[in-house]
Length: 453
Image (tube, rainbow, N blue to C red; front, side, top):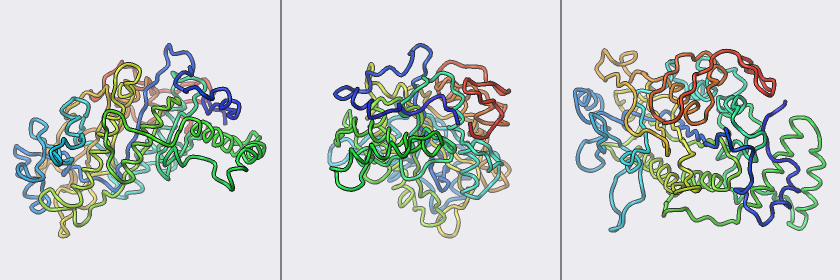
């Protein structure tokens, strides 16, 4: 396999050369025409109940909503009430309150009011599939209806982007224990839970230098296995050099406790290391709420969305700044789930697998507000007579981010078979004509070939 990017090789020499310096002084190629934006994919696993996250708080659909959810509806006033977004919609993403007389940590609602958060209603996949695993794979591979695609959509984005430097220290990062299928087939991805634990820890520390030398000699080959092992050693060396074991979030950002807050804090740290990161992934599970979802806007679902809200808001706050340190001007976060939930609550005060969902886009170049076409909740407007219909294909949102923010118009390769792109207006940036046909790239990869390259 030939790649147009990869870790800086011979990293022991690189560490020696850069000792005492900061990687943000390293030029990763000609800055003219180089795209430095970072795309972050957050997947909410389990199928979020989008109708209890972005919901109607007025109009005729409020009546349909209340009739279908007498126990678990989100109220429009009082405790746990939805926060108004304008028009008929409200957001249920954690209370906008004060704690002990001090302002509470920032929430998604604060970012929405500041114009940094776009909410896309009735978004998802037109493919009707109620299986978690099939639906997640369809979306992450970028090929609805096809599970055998050997590469993910983010992998194909990196392979086709012609505006990136030939060498990047860390092009892709998967936060957590697993790598999203969106990065399937990528040999450029580092998996990490924390930079402090991303190190070589085999035997006594006195042996480490000898171990590194020995491991490098063992991985001194040309196969994908040799290259993967060598790249891993490179990544360990570079991150150990740039991680001092302590981190203080900027701007007073407060990450929530638990794995999600830890993961977003890790991602912020890695972005600030300026290692050339271009794509990253984070998962957040626990959305399969068949029972005990919570009554009157409280309970389990409220706790879960509050964690999500505060983690995203802390991440944005941590990266927000001015001048060269304004990372939010380069970051776009897209949040999605495999499907939504049924309109009608079940007998266990929960919701079963549905169809239409929602998407969120967060960043410094986001056009905030509610986007998309609302299909309505009357019986005749529901998909299959039971679910919110999908009016915005999830690939339309991703394609707009790829074109306007990442500068990659090769949609025919990234999303094979998808040819109906038009910008929804969720992000700002230059419009490039989408390219659906075959293209030959600098590494010899031909569009339409979905195999390894």
